[in-house]
Image 1 (tube, one colour):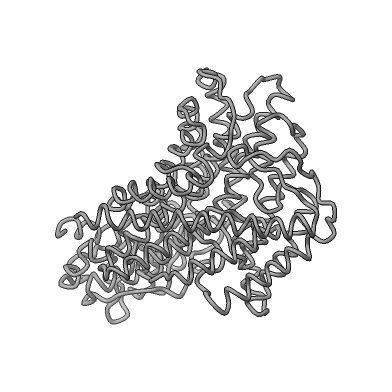
Image 2 (spheres, one colour; image 1 turned 90 degrees about the horizontal axis):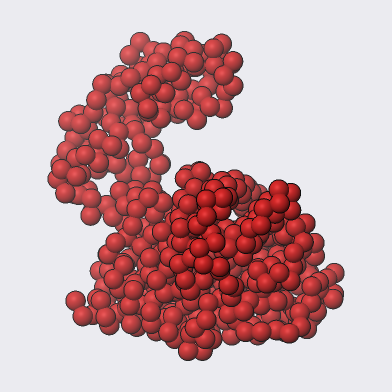
Length: 565
């Protein structure tokens, strides 16, 4: 008990804090010698990171920026390709993937991530510091677990604890770091066992980092008491949540679209970050907010020193594009920081627009801070930790109520897709938790004992009829049967791709999928559950001698698990 809740968390927190300090020093060193000396760009910095009396609004040698970012991407790509392929791309997502698949992360991968991310951001790539330190912390947790020869379950907890400790240090937010270590792995669930050790580790890492860089929050602004809980303001925060949700949908769609395009390129893997970096550099030439870490620009807007609505809106699209090119091409970094920047800019643009066009007098910094956490909550499906973050970013609770309204509005309207593709919905969907959910008991139960009589359609039925059945029964798909034989399946997404008028004339056989995953009645529930988890489906047709005899759903298996667990 002492080792699990005190000794290991303290070690993980101490090392995570030290690595965070080392990462910031490495990032500052590269920024100074590349962005400042070569490109001639002295970026503004937020109040919590010191004061810079002079900064350049635009790079003196902007024409060099695409080349510099491309070289940074090439170096980062080479280091990643030859030393640590698992550290490529989004750091937080790599940690989430390792957690769910019980993968080991090494200190070597943490060091490579530290160096490559410092190069990516320090040369001007649009990326965040929080993602890399999340993977670094997770790697420390995994390495400490290996050193103490912990079980796979305890290694998984150590990865979560390390991730939270890294976030707590770099964001100077120990409570949010601890909670995100339990929340970020799932869209609708928690790793509750990570909470207590994460509290210890996050406090230690935050203390180590704060002793070097100070304990003041990253952003500094005055939030007028009681201003944001007036009825007009609260209604406006609902609108902000809606706007953030719409931006999240576009942001996530574009990021994965660009990532898919780079994945399909027939170039060597280490070349792709250079190409992505070149395009990110072109974006940075158009808007300096998209160069490196743009937190300083948010501080300037909060202070009223930058009040151009056009600048802010251009910055939103610039950061989305720049981050998508930088990280989507395989560059090293994270999406946490860019998400926060995009959210802050959205909050600024929203409140500025209402004030400029409708004569409202909203407090722009308040909307910026709430926008930061609302957009990240929608993109990362982590609403609770971001609510805690609001208090730690402002050192007060004045924005807690409006943040609750905006965050949960954005969360519920932002769609199912997360910026972290390795997230799963619940622990039931995580391979790491299979034994926890009684998978061994499922080995003794046959599918025929659980399957139900299926609801089916014929190939000649209209698509409209299939839609009405799916809608009335609240199910995701229907087996298509002809003379007792399973010939295909039609899903709700298949139907939604067809316009309502066409549903009346098209037949099921015109749009159904003929490739159907099935099980037989003598398969075990564990085998059926394995297919569902690996393919991300909720129900399987049961076939015997080419005849459809039943259907088994994940909800049915869930009820069995709860009964035997």
